[in-house]
Image 1: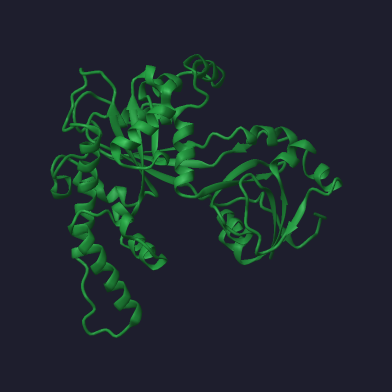
Image 2: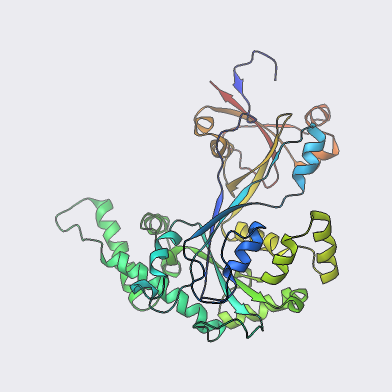
Length: 376
């Protein structure tokens, strides 16, 4: 772009969209140990007794993305800013939590704010760690989800029918609420009821817990991680869920990884016979479940990854950087990541004709390297 041009480039970055994941489960299943490991520091109190987490613990971790370092080298910058995930460690829920049993009730509201629920289940063999309410995987799953559903039912039953209203939108809203309430009363999760976009939007507006997608994280012994693919299949069958909803993690391994350098982590994982850490697998699964993807910006000031919904248009992606960018969007310079690396940056891709100029209807693709052209 020539000096004096009336464009504002994406490297002037102001805002960021991040992913929020709430970690839930029965007491002593390894939630806080996993949380500590994910954050690589002891932000939560991991102790061998129920309700060790007295306040919701929140921490932000970077999304592992090896592409950023390669881009930084090409554009000659030392500033790398990965996409982020916010993890919220919720106190152990028990049967009756929606009515105030244990400490769970006060944290149900905190779960309403997350994008995705990470339900940790116990499959490690250390019997020195007390089993607080844990029976078996399927029963544990049902216990937690029933508490979430009962909390949703309480929310739904507090809604009031618009008796005198003839407003079609209000009447449709009440029709959906009535449907949700009837299904919740017979034990059906709201996410299983939703069939249309207006139902999805109303569930989101009401912050219904069981309308959120769930990933089941099975906390296993260290020697079981090598067979994680086989375990995913067997655990999906036990839980009655899809394989894509299950992640196998050893919180103990993640704790040990947290104390190692990046190079030593690679060697440690190689010795275990696995290619990725539990954090990487969990984040990838979360992106898949929520239909998220990343686009990249690369300039002399910084290299950064941004998170958007799959299918987002170029103006919507620009809006993640700053709301004014969506409104004043003109065009986007777009390059495939592989081409950007192969031809050594913006100058190289332009010379070989690999840089595209895309308009308002362009749908972003995973790994697009983008420079937005924004009017003043």
